[in-house]
Length: 191
Figure 1: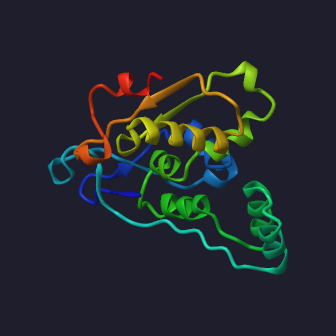
Figure 2 (figure 1 turned 90 degrees about the vertical axis):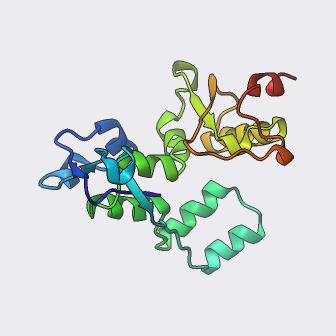
Figure 3 (figure 1 turned 60 degrees about the horizontal axis):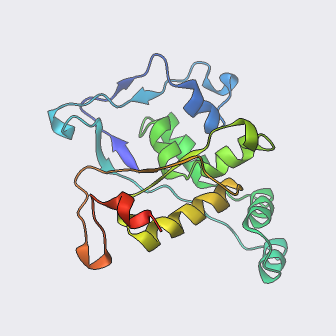
């Protein structure tokens, strides 16, 4: 995950409640706590971020998780058992880094695959909402985009997306040997 620039990070007087809610922060947890925001300066090329740190998830294998794995149980069932056994998720570690002023809620939503969180929030409301997801440039080949979309569908627990965006990342280098192209993506994905 990207870390906030030490030279320009600043308190966020009004952090986005949508991001805080997606990350599971309650108003009570946020009382008296400060969230920082990315500002931008010459040191960070105007992005508000400089450098990266890892966020980590660690699961200790216990008997219940082992049995579920051997039975090839769905990921959400394994995850639930692991959490009950004390596993700290990427999201948990990300929340700590937000509260320690290392990064922002938006960055943690981006890197923790917030699709899983959205899937829980959507529940039985699929026909009442408009679902949007994204594909990164390194997956922008025909096969890569299809596989990335299928992973999104699985994480979201749905059969369709209403809009699938190509997300460009600044300074992304293309690899023509893998069929990656910045332009012409639409023509590659039309079957």
